[in-house]
Image (tube, rainbow, N blue to C red; front, side):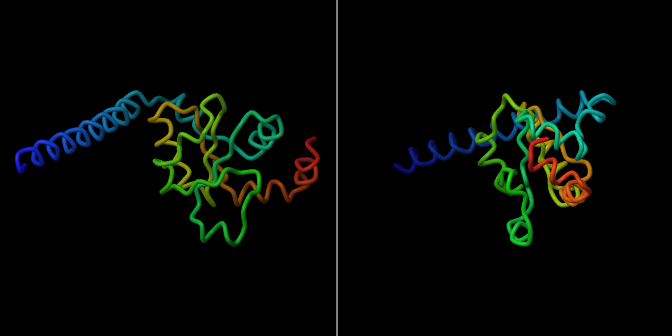
Length: 148
């Protein structure tokens, strides 16, 4: 019985180790192949994001902590905390552009990198949700709400 338990634990450990090794290699391959063009296309700004949201061509993913979302939130954004992304990324539509966002951009860059390593078409909101809210307040909010 003890030998069977050791065998099962060994298989589980090796299985976990192989998965971690495989994901590490994917991330390493992404980093090794990273180019100037990749750096340019990995970010998006509020104006372009608002146009894509209105056309239904993008999914905005709010990766902020729940405490931040209690103060204010974007009702049209998908709510997935950064820490939940590994367990919930399959909820995202691989056919659409994914835009990750947080208050500024630190966590959205981490989320973007993680999702890109999994093969998603993803960019991060360069001016953050704070910048996006300012953009919408600057006369764009009414147009955005009306779908213009």
